[in-house]
Length: 317
Ligand code: SER
Image (cartoon, rainbow, N blue to C red; front, side, top):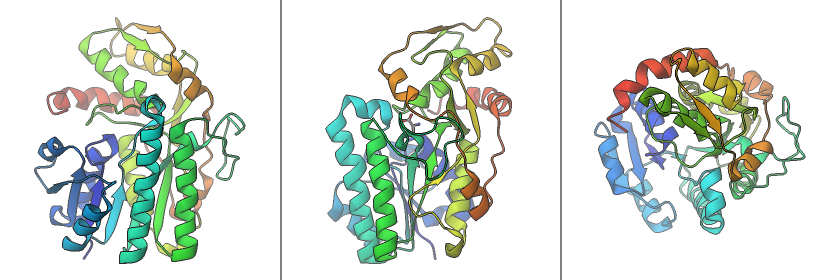
């Protein structure tokens, strides 16, 4: 039987992924974990363990005592936060992955999921239709940690047969958790401002185009990749994945259709520099070929869905 441990469960991806994993595998098969004890109240429907992913001894103990067969390792510091605390972010993002890959090898875990990011790309990478094997010149601590992490995943697969699978996510947009220190998180925050009748101050310039994805697509992709037959997985670093691309101005105009009085002003800060070096669009042909990836949501569909659902979630996040 599958027993799935999720680290960093209280984050944006974890919050929604755990709900879906419980639906698909049954609540008794899922253990949510997070360094924050208070996160337990987010997951009344499955087990929760307070866990620091840097604590190798405790992590091993949980895996053994709970008979864990798969780990979804989501705990990480995102791009904007990482630039504020570079050394701490590097240690957490890198060491926790290495701890887990070692445990996966030693304890012969069935599968590992680890998210990478478009942040692996940088100034020298092509901006448009950035390919699976495009040159990686990350210039953020987060991007460097994801780029190195991808290589470690591939290494543990090649040398130790650890079945680790990964996706290079674009900016993820969901309404079930608070934004968590990412450069693309402006596109989450803007919905909260529009709904509360406040104006929005964008820390990116109006024409900064970035690849983005609505959370239900990201969750579906994660499940599809993890369920794909092993022999179909040809990429053991991380798969490019795409859904939509837009600028702050474009999402603002989309929201203005629903909230005609909504205002935006642009006050770019250090995050503009991060975004300026990332791709504007991604080529995800390999994921389409290997495990039939196809996105469902574009900007208008996502906007409509969030506006309908967010008001019911405001008191839960
Ligand atoms: N969404 C992430 C961030 O902005 C990138 O993967 O940090």
